[in-house]
Image (cartoon, rainbow, N blue to C red; front, side, top):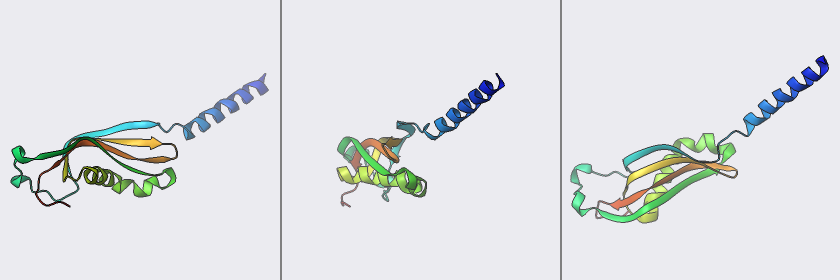
Length: 124
Protein backbone atom coordinates (compact mmCIF):
# COMPACT_ATOMS: atom_id res chain seq x y z
CA UNK A 1 0.00 0.00 0.00
CA UNK A 2 2.85 2.37 0.86
CA UNK A 3 4.48 1.60 -2.45
CA UNK A 4 1.38 2.65 -4.43
CA UNK A 5 1.18 5.85 -2.44
CA UNK A 6 4.83 6.71 -3.22
CA UNK A 7 4.31 5.95 -6.91
CA UNK A 8 1.20 8.14 -6.93
CA UNK A 9 3.06 11.01 -5.27
CA UNK A 10 5.97 10.62 -7.72
CA UNK A 11 3.63 10.66 -10.73
CA UNK A 12 1.82 13.71 -9.38
CA UNK A 13 5.11 15.56 -8.73
CA UNK A 14 6.37 14.73 -12.23
CA UNK A 15 3.13 15.94 -13.79
CA UNK A 16 3.31 19.24 -11.88
CA UNK A 17 6.94 19.80 -12.84
CA UNK A 18 6.40 18.97 -16.51
CA UNK A 19 3.26 21.09 -16.72
CA UNK A 20 5.28 24.10 -15.57
CA UNK A 21 7.43 23.89 -18.70
CA UNK A 22 4.46 24.13 -21.02
CA UNK A 23 2.40 26.68 -19.14
CA UNK A 24 3.46 29.67 -21.28
CA UNK A 25 0.30 31.33 -22.56
CA UNK A 26 -0.40 31.14 -26.27
CA UNK A 27 -1.80 33.99 -28.30
CA UNK A 28 -2.00 37.62 -27.16
CA UNK A 29 -1.64 39.20 -23.74
CA UNK A 30 -2.57 42.87 -23.55
CA UNK A 31 0.18 45.00 -22.04
CA UNK A 32 -1.33 48.45 -22.29
CA UNK A 33 -3.22 51.15 -24.19
CA UNK A 34 -1.56 54.42 -25.16
CA UNK A 35 -3.16 57.57 -26.50
CA UNK A 36 -0.05 58.61 -28.44
CA UNK A 37 3.06 56.57 -29.23
CA UNK A 38 6.00 57.41 -31.46
CA UNK A 39 9.60 56.43 -31.99
CA UNK A 40 10.27 59.72 -33.81
CA UNK A 41 11.08 63.17 -32.46
CA UNK A 42 7.70 64.91 -32.75
CA UNK A 43 7.23 68.50 -31.58
CA UNK A 44 3.80 68.40 -29.96
CA UNK A 45 3.58 72.16 -29.49
CA UNK A 46 3.68 72.58 -33.30
CA UNK A 47 1.00 70.00 -34.08
CA UNK A 48 -2.28 71.30 -35.40
CA UNK A 49 -4.88 68.61 -34.70
CA UNK A 50 -7.03 69.83 -37.59
CA UNK A 51 -4.19 69.30 -40.08
CA UNK A 52 -3.19 65.82 -38.97
CA UNK A 53 -3.50 63.35 -41.83
CA UNK A 54 -4.73 59.87 -41.01
CA UNK A 55 -2.46 57.62 -43.03
CA UNK A 56 -4.12 54.36 -42.00
CA UNK A 57 -6.40 52.93 -39.32
CA UNK A 58 -5.91 49.59 -37.61
CA UNK A 59 -2.25 49.26 -38.57
CA UNK A 60 -0.31 46.37 -37.03
CA UNK A 61 3.39 46.22 -36.34
CA UNK A 62 5.14 43.10 -35.07
CA UNK A 63 8.44 42.22 -33.50
CA UNK A 64 9.10 38.48 -33.23
CA UNK A 65 12.18 36.55 -32.21
CA UNK A 66 12.84 32.92 -31.31
CA UNK A 67 11.83 32.11 -27.73
CA UNK A 68 15.37 31.29 -26.66
CA UNK A 69 16.56 34.78 -27.70
CA UNK A 70 13.54 36.73 -26.41
CA UNK A 71 15.00 37.82 -23.05
CA UNK A 72 17.97 39.44 -24.85
CA UNK A 73 15.89 41.34 -27.41
CA UNK A 74 12.76 42.08 -25.38
CA UNK A 75 13.96 45.49 -24.16
CA UNK A 76 13.92 46.94 -27.67
CA UNK A 77 10.98 44.86 -28.91
CA UNK A 78 8.17 47.37 -28.30
CA UNK A 79 10.18 50.13 -29.99
CA UNK A 80 10.75 47.93 -33.02
CA UNK A 81 7.07 46.92 -33.23
CA UNK A 82 5.98 50.59 -33.11
CA UNK A 83 8.60 51.52 -35.71
CA UNK A 84 7.39 48.72 -38.01
CA UNK A 85 3.78 49.95 -37.77
CA UNK A 86 4.71 53.59 -38.39
CA UNK A 87 6.87 52.64 -41.39
CA UNK A 88 4.12 50.44 -42.78
CA UNK A 89 1.78 53.44 -43.10
CA UNK A 90 4.45 56.14 -43.74
CA UNK A 91 3.44 58.33 -40.80
CA UNK A 92 5.26 59.70 -37.79
CA UNK A 93 3.15 58.69 -34.77
CA UNK A 94 0.40 56.32 -33.68
CA UNK A 95 -2.74 57.20 -31.77
CA UNK A 96 -5.10 54.90 -29.86
CA UNK A 97 -2.38 52.29 -29.73
CA UNK A 98 -2.71 48.91 -27.98
CA UNK A 99 0.39 46.82 -27.24
CA UNK A 100 0.27 43.05 -26.84
CA UNK A 101 2.82 40.41 -25.99
CA UNK A 102 2.39 37.58 -28.48
CA UNK A 103 3.46 33.97 -28.84
CA UNK A 104 3.43 32.26 -32.22
CA UNK A 105 4.76 28.69 -32.53
CA UNK A 106 8.40 28.92 -31.41
CA UNK A 107 8.55 32.74 -31.41
CA UNK A 108 7.73 35.47 -28.89
CA UNK A 109 7.43 39.19 -29.34
CA UNK A 110 5.18 42.22 -29.40
CA UNK A 111 2.23 43.31 -31.51
CA UNK A 112 1.18 46.95 -31.79
CA UNK A 113 -2.23 47.97 -33.20
CA UNK A 114 -3.39 51.52 -33.77
CA UNK A 115 -4.00 54.41 -36.14
CA UNK A 116 -1.03 56.01 -37.87
CA UNK A 117 -1.06 59.76 -38.56
CA UNK A 118 1.31 62.18 -40.19
CA UNK A 119 1.85 65.45 -38.36
CA UNK A 120 4.92 66.85 -40.10
CA UNK A 121 5.48 67.75 -43.73
CA UNK A 122 8.77 65.98 -44.28
CA UNK A 123 8.68 62.23 -44.68
CA UNK A 124 11.10 59.86 -42.99
